[in-house]
Image 1: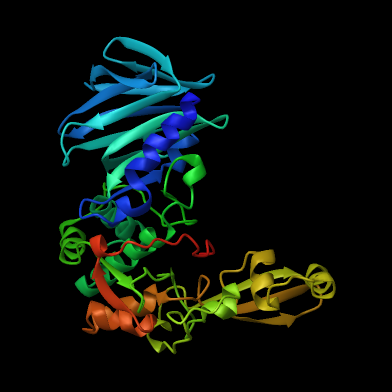
Image 2: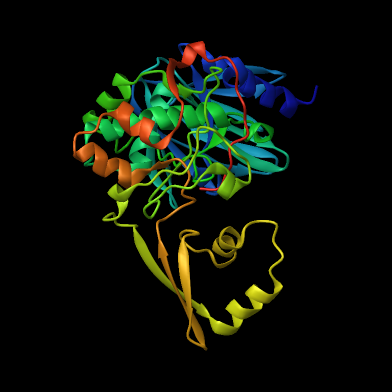
Length: 367
């Protein structure tokens, strides 16, 4: 077996499939921002970490990470500089000595971020990859703060923790060919580490620990979410052409005072008319138009002024599932996390993650 196939199998064996449905679930996250940087600096934030390098189909320990280590891209792999040691290899791991240890990664383009778990640096399919192998319950708070920020009611954080955990479970394996379950971008869920997670978010995630949303057959639902629905959510069928009984249209006036409730955008008149005449997309016209002109949402009215077309729109995002700004307002007014979830998802149940054994990786990537 070629070394890189063996390496990818090692990562996936840790985090993919039913391993995610265990009480100590792990998930592997592609750190795509750091993957773009030529050099990444590594520093221990809490606890201790050790360098491992792959040699002869096995990992060999190189010693503890002390002060600041540096790893940079090299031909066919990575070059590591730490503690006076310089090594080149297609695969390095920064491994924590205990579960609560934290690592700080730093690059010029990304700045610094803190993570809990093991960091894998590897070369695969002629590309450099960085993947974080972390407990699901360390991943979720980082997603919640990245997706909605601070200053919200506790019920909002509890609801979003359940949604984010479910979404990760359902989409796990989307990036399996690259060696990780999910990425840290909007394509999956935004995950910028734990640097900005506060006690309120930690408490809300802990209060919902391991809980996920399932359908009547016990399968994780497609827990889609978006910023603002513009007054009514959309059904899965309307956006993705696939009917889903858990994702139906819901009237939602709670989001109409939200920051992303309305927008205006202008496009060239000739460009607009050519698009109308030539569009033969298999998608609905409003959905296809949103994608073509990169509009915030597909809920809009267009006013043709000749040279320009002014587009007045409502909402932000695909509009399916939980409306974040609507849910925020509901939580502020005292609605519980469970009632929020029941508002945006139909016929759902709560189950501990360890009881969920069926994973499906078919959620849309359209956020």
